[in-house]
Length: 353
Image 1 (cartoon, helix red, strand yellow):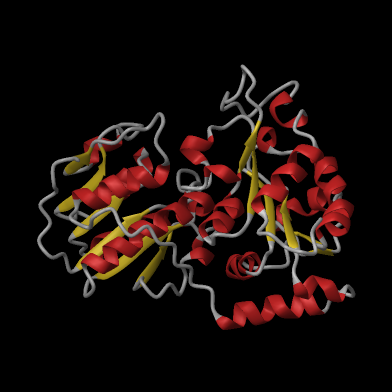
Image 2 (cartoon, rainbow, N blue to C red):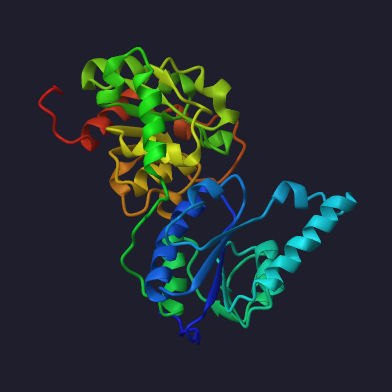
């Protein structure tokens, strides 16, 4: 346990965790602990617009501060972008936060923490890019074989919030669930509304992507062997990839983040690569098979659900490389490997042989 950070009933608190989707999901237990410890505090979260849907309207949050990375990244060459960035920094100071926690651990996020001028600024002692220089208090954490959530819990413990319970609360509303029901019932196949498998073939690294052809091979077998019609889902940038999978329903690019959560809430099964939506499904406790190749599931896998992970133990994995000439770690994972794992993950159903 790290030395406690002297925090005296802060009235205004800022969490800095801009991205990505999986990282934002991993931060939800931290938010829950923070709110439980300081029920009357004003809690804000600095996040990118692409991830804001996961926390916008969250009952445990009072404010969402958007950091438009694309726009502000042009500040050095566009006067208007520079002016907007200066305004963003001024806003951080005007907020007069008492406590700022940087869970991103990079130069930029630490600089934002410093710009708030908060009297207590907490971050990881081994954060990258000289980030610790901007903190008033540094929490030692392990990075090699420790899950991201465990690192965040170490920070929570250091600021007197404890480490449990580990709970994931999403801001999904009834209207999000109603919209998903509309999408399901609009499909010509009536069985989709009665139980379905969600396929999530997208990833942010090409090397983390199980072949689309393998996903496609699952579709008829899931229906025939497990009585599960399939839905393929993803972001608008993944439309072309997902079009290669002949699922009963393609919702790629047709849901908001909150609607995606609602879709996954009702899934009888989720099959996914190492991706942000996979972490949503894991947090929701859905039956899950997640495919790992170049990354280490101990560090970035579904939290506290190692039984859902399927990977090949080959010498070059994990390599953490975004480029690979052979991608053996995933190419050699066959659809039958996945289907065997599916049977282990699904609850016993008399309809399934």
